[in-house]
Image 1 (cartoon, helix red, strand yellow):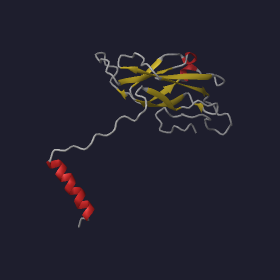
Image 2 (cartoon, helix red, strand yellow):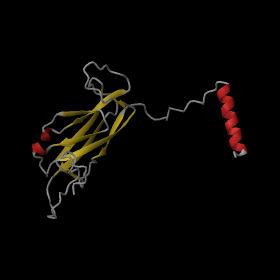
Image 3 (cartoon, helix red, strand yellow):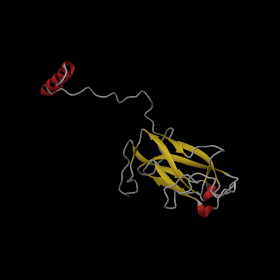
Image 4 (cartoon, helix red, strand yellow):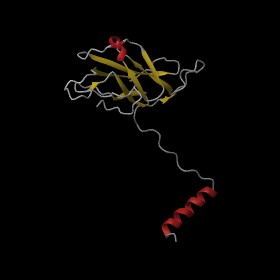
Length: 173
């Protein structure tokens, strides 16, 4: 048995549908900037965070629709659509990894990272044709990479130890 408020709600809904009424539009303007932006979620810049040679990178992207099909040569620039580049530090071979998802994997094992060096990774938003977007479309994270057992307990003392090696264990321990 329906209650009186529930019956009234159903009646108004039915009346609205019969009259062809549509619900009011949602307020899509949050009052914030419409400029695309990107921020690292992981890793974070911290002297306490030491990454393994292979690790996951994750970003938060606002005001841009990621297009995982950016590699298609015939793809045209579309406003509000693009992907991001992970720019690798020169000390780790340099280069760019293009990503159409808000995450990716990095493996610098063959670059022999120096555990005493801080490396700067840059995330940059670009359009479908790889042209950098204006505004606050870049974020940088500085990390150390040291894949060793510094405390002698038999475990790696770094984060991200399973990312590139077919393991779902991304704890480094």
